[in-house]
Image 1: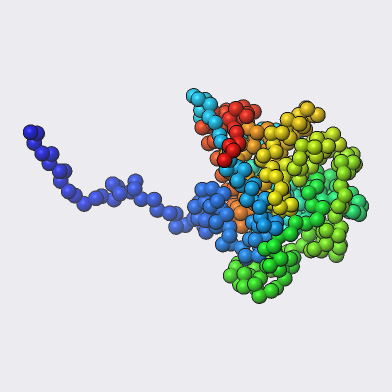
Image 2: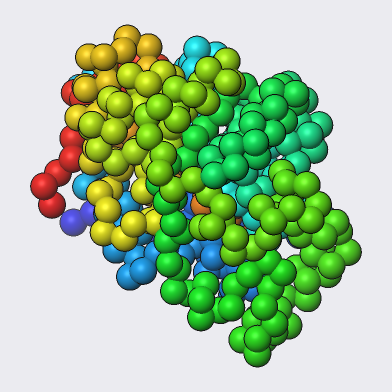
Length: 415
């Protein structure tokens, strides 16, 4: 029988022994940096963002139309993704660089148009465009933006700015928007075609959501809980639809259904393409036939989108249409690109979309969550998370660059 082992003698720990185990937060870090440092995912940003704005603003950004079936389906489609790594194919430093509309981009990500962005943070579209420019990604300014095309261009020198176009019944208004985009160096027009009428968002109706806010008891209670947000809104430039002239009926809340064109056809795409003379992207496509018709009319790219679940409820999940649309578009054009939005919130989602045939994805809510949490630095955080997640996914998948991501690596499970 062996002799028992004697325990080591006890002693008081020294500071140098304890130091490696202590993770002391930097007390001098400013509050925004502290908030963002705790966010390890878009889910974390979403959780923190919800606390930063009044309930009516949150419901407007995060909510969907009708019963929010499409909103749920969008995310469920990405949950069905199965990523298949290449055996022994792991790479240490994959590249996310690509081209979008023939120009370099740091990653296959476009920042989608979002209306009324200054509701999320008083720095609004200027901050988002500046962040996108710094990240080397395109940013799309909405027709219903709360900053003008000129102001956004000034805030993002050297950035790749696109202009999202709602076609109006009065085509002179549309022509003016096209002229603004051209004057301020915008690279592409994005025509949105899925808004014959605005989808009903029940939460917005219940909240009395409007610009300026309808001051019901419910909205007043929500505003009272967020004095910082209220102060920032009241002490900066007034909220308005800044792409329209002051006093224009087109800049009035609730007038869009009466003033927007409701009978768009492929010929309209062709006409705007001729008028613009540059790249045209068509957003809001949910069928193979419509995608092909847009490309045949001259579109340089189509975006498979159900408007983030904010328009037609119970519509298809755009991710599920990527493969058939990409195949059909390739047969009629060797250069037209296919993008997808609605539900993207992780770099692995970007990889999945590429594997199914998309050239790039659009993101909207994720960067608005970052904006709510930390202004421009919050948008920087959102984009950094997506790119880091994408790189990590590619590394583990065994794909050294975006062109090597194929259908071999991605499939949609039945359940």
